[in-house]
Image 1 (cartoon, helix red, strand yellow):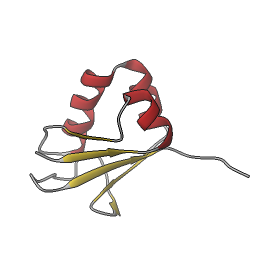
Image 2 (tube, rainbow, N blue to C red):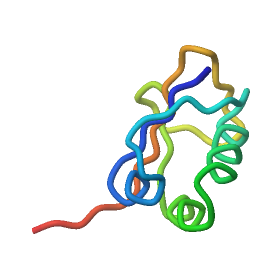
Image 3 (tube, helix red, strand yellow):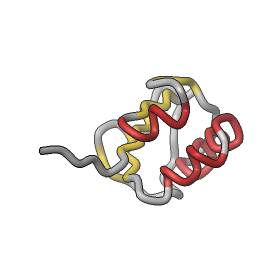
Image 4 (tube, rainbow, N blue to C red):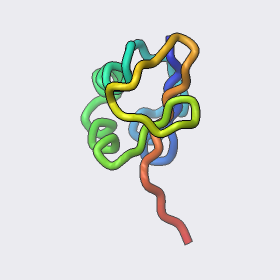
Length: 78
């Protein structure tokens, strides 16, 4: 099952930094994650970038059993 890695606001919304979430595409993985983590997590996704194994991808990108899907919300700092 793909590993979902969550950073910054996505981690806070989900309450975890890492989880296993099923899906054959990025879209399916994220849909299943929204069902698990709820509306606050869904809101974070609207401004986040998604990478699979270190490469930025679109929602229709395939995801395999050993892949890592990372959700990277924008961050600010100073």
